[in-house]
Image (cartoon, rainbow, N blue to C red; front, side, top):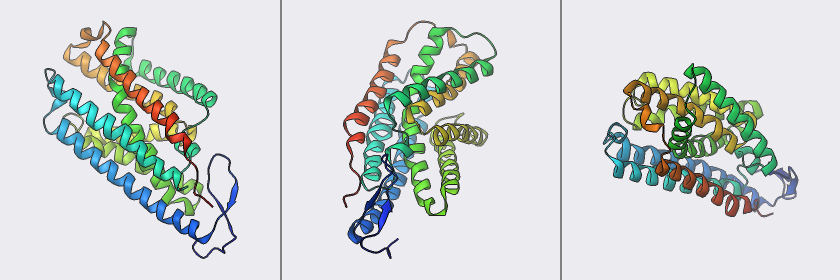
Length: 290
């Protein structure tokens, strides 16, 4: 790539799918930007895991129902500040330098996204219904779905948008299929591994292996559908399965039969922040200057 002539054309992979003339300076900028994005994505993942451990796994936040302040701090810092805001800032760096594109990371046109979300939502709901093997109170499902959503947004943003896209960018020279397989494996493995920073039972080896498999299923939705919102809608149901099983096992499921306004409010805030950054920040990025 470095040896390309000054007037050579380079394909960005941006939504227009055009070939734009690039100077040697721009090509060097693209290469340095690519590795900068990969390093930033890796550091963001590592920072997210560390913060998750400090605010959840280390003090067993999930195992202490009375630890409401700790849950709020964990949600705000690990999932909103790091998982959403920081990860989208890093994502911007990759799109700005042309390392990745809006389309490949799943930021698609509104009409396509609406259709994809509907399909993914119904598919996820069907999996949950089959897994649950029985009717589920709609309010319980709504509460659990809202409870899981903030974490899901962070997981998709970091493990798939950042790590999956970074792996795909690294392997792009080896062909599209190899790059996609690499993205699937990297995102799924690191998604499973991240749960080692959580409290039991999520940090147990068997659970990490199971979650890695779940990550592969989510990866197929992400890398085939290429829509981040559809991936969130689908993946969130997979998270709901474990929460519902835990609530039924402990006999706490009845607590979810009435609307839990704080949980729903946090879900609305989380997706609202993500959408706002998407519209006002991510989609206003220009490719590498020529």
